[in-house]
Length: 356
Image 1 (tube, rainbow, N blue to C red):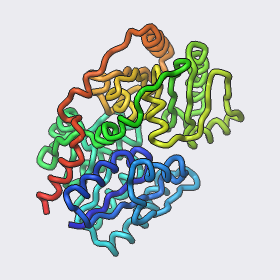
Image 2 (cartoon, helix red, strand yellow; image 1 turned 30 degrees about the horizontal axis):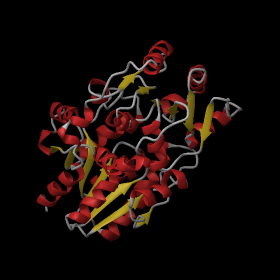
Image 3 (cartoon, rainbow, N blue to C red; image 1 turned 90 degrees about the vertical axis):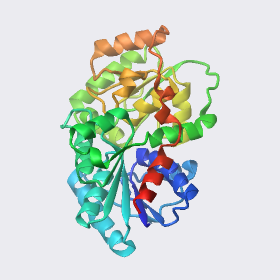
């Protein structure tokens, strides 16, 4: 069995690492790691391979969109990946998550009549205006194997008529978090701090909305220090507004490596984010999380985790911040879910091998 494992962004790298370990454990020797190049900055990509113990990609498609066009990026990835598949002739292509690289490689695989497996299938936020929501639905609809990270993801696929292809395996991102947890243990901090991540198109592409978010963050920084690893996309948008909004109690950082970032998260008082994966990571680590979006695909982080969906509602954010700082916050039950035992990737590989 010849497998292509396709990655393109930071979350993809994290989710892929346990799969690579599982491939080796189960003697799946004929696999190739394909990097589309969607994240090409060293701190956003290169160092992740080193820290996660992932071998260097067998091929880097080096697809960079110069004008941030989704269409251009997807088209270029499809063209490059098709050429690679014509030479390698994989039996199965494995894609992860919901980014443009995921959709591009999935569409190419479908057109070339190659079997397709989707890791993290079935997750839905209910907002079809989000690129990621459209991506994940399209990929699910053309996949031969749908590997679900949660019971809700499986329920969604059953309701959409795709139960025959669906398998409940758990979350490979949690596999990786359990794997590195001894390396990110809590250390004593001189002062409490919050972590901020901000990169979603819905938040940063609208400059008026970005200014509103930043006004909220400025007020938060009066209560607690804010550490802000600034995504290249967000930094570019600040540049369009004519400033990099540095303040005394806000610490700007370049994008961090996986271990550096997770150490910061594990030691933080709270996390403010518009990321998807970070909602799950904070819930597993029992870290308070305020999500700066109006919806989430990870609903279990709200029902069983430490997450609250605040959007950019200043009242909800302020109430949440005050509750956290006063030590009154929900405790997570997510880590007690039997699906989160660090074996999700192994379940995936066992199912793929049975389909040989």
